[in-house]
Image (cartoon, rainbow, N blue to C red):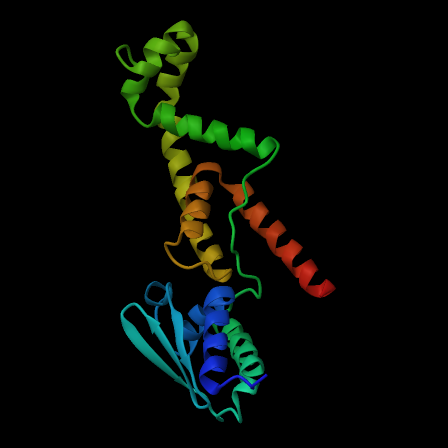
Amino acid sequence: MAAPTEAQVKQRIVGHMNKDHQDSVIRYAEYYGKASRFTSRNAVLQDVALDKLTIVTGGKTIIIPLDPPMQGLKDARERLVEMDKQALAGLNRSPITLKEYKFPKGFPVLVFVACLGTYLLYSRERNMLPGSWLHDMVLKHIPSFTSFALKMRNYIIWPMLVIHITEASIMMNTLKKYSVPLFSRIWWLWTVSCFIEGYDSFRRIRAYEKEKLGKSVQH
């Protein structure tokens, strides 16, 4: 069997990086290419040469020089791994990339539902007044609770919003630490989930990191 051509080797490297290691490509764009998180969020490796990487992102082409140049494409894996380690350190990122959303389980599900229900109930005062679907179908049958909830609305919803908006802001920085692309599906799932439920979303991310680190040690 004939040895693969240089073009075929390049194609394999580029395809592998874009399919299995796009998080690394994004970090290359951020760290070496000085691209913003927004610009680099959909970065793809277009070409790999002995002396440079070519990355396309946000309608821009980023050329990353390789100094010293590689001796051959056989050195690409080792060079790309070392470049990613340097990018992780320079960007202050975790070696673990958060690639999935973990749903709450057990008691945290009840907390999630309770918080979501509170948002829905208190989103509008008229939700608790005659004429609304919620009042006419449910709340009119529990008048004492409805009266109490109406009186407590401003004492509950506004502090809750302040606390959960703050937690969601912290979550955005947490997702940055775990190299979650800005405004991606995973980014939205975790951010909205944190806004609703708060603390347990952070606990699940820490558990995910611990699990992945444990597997990497085993291998």
